[in-house]
Amino acid sequence: MQVLQQGRILENKDANNILKIISNEQAMHVLRSTIGTPKSAWDISTNSGIPLTQVYRWVRRLHNSGLVRVSGDTNASGKKFFMYQSKVISVKMTLTSAAETVIELS
Image (cartoon, rainbow, N blue to C red; front, side, top):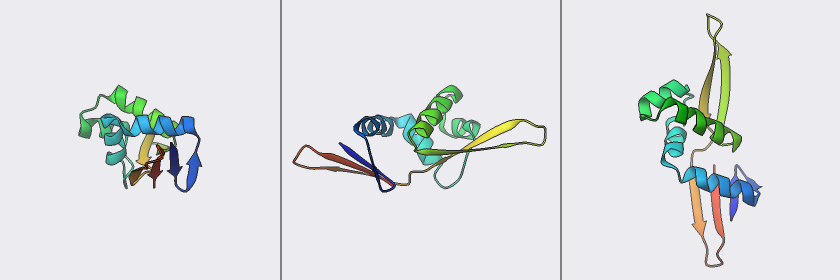
């Protein structure tokens, strides 16, 4: 299996990890809901019905895989907050007769 992420080829271990992630409904909902506009974990949880703890788990896993961008700031009262935005807009999977699978993320 081969994964092309923004023009670079990922190792087999990373490719398998990304395939597992994009096959999960909750992970895909987190990605879909953060395309174009950064959102907080609370916003993602509220809009999707996914428990907040699960949102944090998926955001961490998506970030570690390079699929989500994390930005943070401090509000007026001094409390830190984080916003999450998808780095993936499309996923294309190609199956070939040579038992080679190519997944392209852009």
